[in-house]
Length: 154
Image (tube, rainbow, N blue to C red; front, side, top):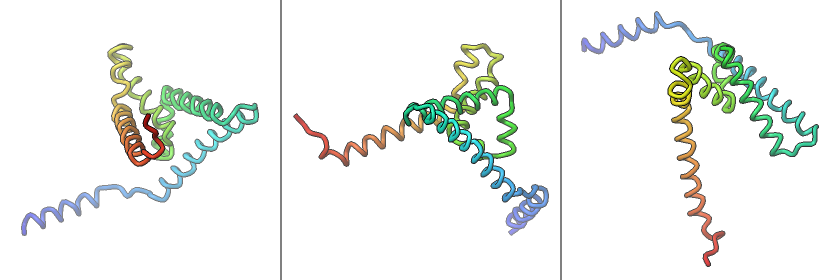
């Protein structure tokens, strides 16, 4: 009985000391910043299409430009400020992934380019890569198993 009261007292103390999070404001900021990033990507895609490039090449160029902008802003420590303001809105997969690669590389730059940047660049993104590759292999195997009628054996 005493332990339950102690837990309740502790929870009351934590509730009093913890600041309230402005959830609606955070959601709004994430929404408009994420939308702005996607709009920039769409503008790049439309410019490529206007120049006569096909959809696949336009998508590749758009991805490269968004990754480059994100890496550049991370290098200037601006992407982290955007991330603090926008939260998940700035972590749209391609820009967030670029940031997760560049941030550790910049952090470990003082340890040298081989053992610092090269070895520790994937500390954050490594698990994402492992999961993504593993999941794609599993999905490929499942797809192969359930689509055996399309495979002809000689």
